[in-house]
Image (cartoon, rainbow, N blue to C red; front, side, top):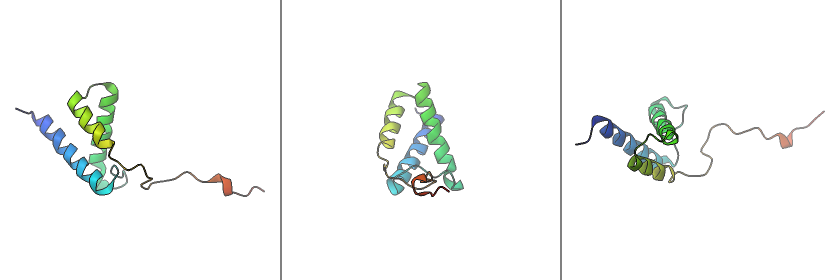
Length: 87
């Protein structure tokens, strides 16, 4: 029988999967409604780096992240200094 934590993990995984399938990227940190899902995804990355995430969950999560778009999806871009005029 799966624990409540496992159940919550899979619910968050499915929510993130649906979000990525619909939009092609992780949630925007500036949108309050999606911040919890983004925080969950960042925490999973932290657990992967620490080596504390179950192998099955790690594989699922990493394969999900691999489905994201590689195009720029918004946010701030660095200022292009090549077109500035120096006096």
